[in-house]
Amino acid sequence: MDEGRRLVMARGGTVLAAMAAAFLAGPACRSAAPRPSPGAAPAAPADPVKGFVGQTLVLRHRGDAKTIGVKRAEVGSLTGECDVVVAVRAGAFERGTARLTLHTVGRPRVPRRGARQERCGDDRPEIVLAVSGFEPGASAADLEGVLGQVLQTPEAYLRARGLAFDLPAGSAPEKPTPEALVTARPERRLWTEAVYQDPARRVRHEGTVELEGVVGTDGRLHDVRLLTTLSLEHEESVRRVLPLWRFEPGRRGKDPAPVQVREQLVFRIYY
Image 1 (cartoon, rainbow, N blue to C red):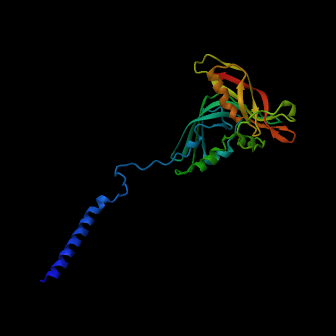
Image 2 (cartoon, one colour):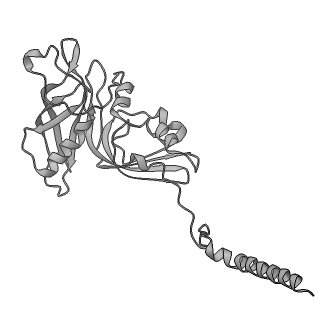
Image 3 (cartoon, rainbow, N blue to C red):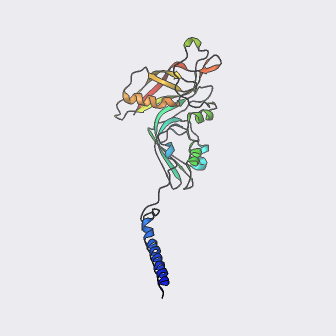
């Protein structure tokens, strides 16, 4: 074999050897996509009732029941004359059933105008609401549409009572309108009494609490100051229900205007 052919073959062997080495070493050099561990559990689906937890809403019809069990299709036909304000303490969704733990914090009130006020039996500090009949993979929007018929926002509650209110929430006003320029004072559309359960079972009381604040052009209370002296626990109970209050805003001429108000609410302590 002449010298030229030996040189070509030598070079070819070197190239093949280099390609083979690169092929064998390649996987170790490349960043491979992470693979799930064979024993790793799949990610849990989002809980569709999670958005309710922490909200303060109006429970319709059954506020004096210790437990409320109802099928999804029957939620819209619930009846009863006990509406209460509740804080949603906990929630879970399992096997097509939404289960919420509710804590009673107040009573809703609207202008009478010939309409009934709620009539409740026993006070229930804690209520369990269970709505069954959902698909196991129900979405949060699906649950909100159904549960929203019995656990209502202030706006939904007013609509159900025949009182329209559609003002979006706004920021706190910088200062109220001078009294001399107010041509129409705010009018209550929805207000809430406060209730508190005495854990020591030593006190049973009902009285009024005075407060001062500003009704903004959004029809909500801002910058609230309690004029009645209360303990820290009792003050927290009162303040918890104030965000549900709704007003027809006051006016300066034809325009909505922030107006300072002094209001009263009933505060009940029971055990």
